[in-house]
Length: 102
Figure (cartoon, rainbow, N blue to C red):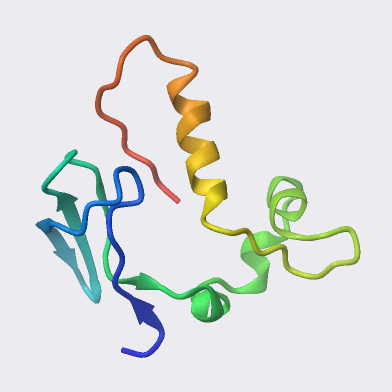
């Protein structure tokens, strides 16, 4: 599919993974190096608007997170993901298991 891209692990960058679970068109893989589970392949940035209707973003929390002050959609680089990982790790004493629903 042209609107999906195959990626390595977002956490440790390993390209090695195995299928964890399939649900409809989505495949969740488990990284063979660190055990992190993630959608792979995943939607490309360009295709994301097809997966989320505008009403999804209409509450205050989403409006501030996903829209610029001029009303345009905010697009982040992949670095935002690593900032979220660092934020989570700063709140716990040791690494463990985490389920991220997004």
